[in-house]
Length: 258
Image 1 (cartoon, one colour):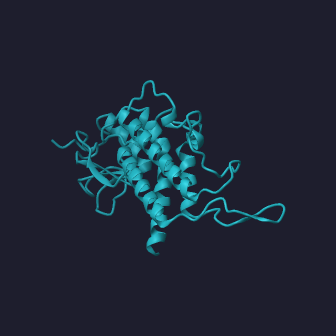
Image 2 (cartoon, helix red, strand yellow):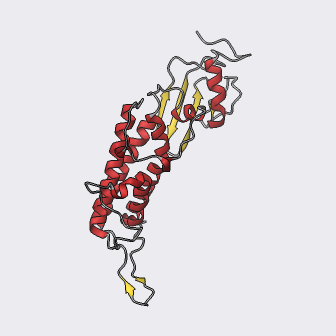
């Protein structure tokens, strides 16, 4: 894989992460900032009202926010939208050749219209991805048999690297806010209900959170052992751990360590 191909791959992956995690960010805006426990994704899963169609939501930069519960998440969402929208503007100014009536065209905002920004960050990410992959860059045959100009010109390399810089920065900030970057975090004041060992939350991009107990194989918790010989609660096991911690223990558990 050469340098240019690697840059395209990394940028496309970052844009797709933004799209895939956008619903989580919108839920975070409507949720008070949480401590380490429980993981944000698990808290949302246990909510009865977590159905959220991202495509039905107006862009954050275009709508009112009368009572956001997490201002940090709202500010980050606005920043990411603005940066992705501005990136689309920059790419369009260089490579866009499509006619005004072409639905593939990126429309700039004006004093009276938000243009393509009205479609939200999902559409903007998909549009930028198309430019990175040089889609629709060959002349197209018209009904009269005459070849028409390609809707877009190939993306210059300097703009590819600018897109990579912006997309990777937005992806990193989004994952950190959602607690999905790679980290191992002790869970304070919540010892293992089965043995009293220290619990730790493990997160990384594109993986669901897990929790491990420091005691090792001697811990009688009803979950499997991980690669380091510790009891590990995988995603499907975490609701049981939440319930046990909320109850202050587990029926039949060993006494908590002093």
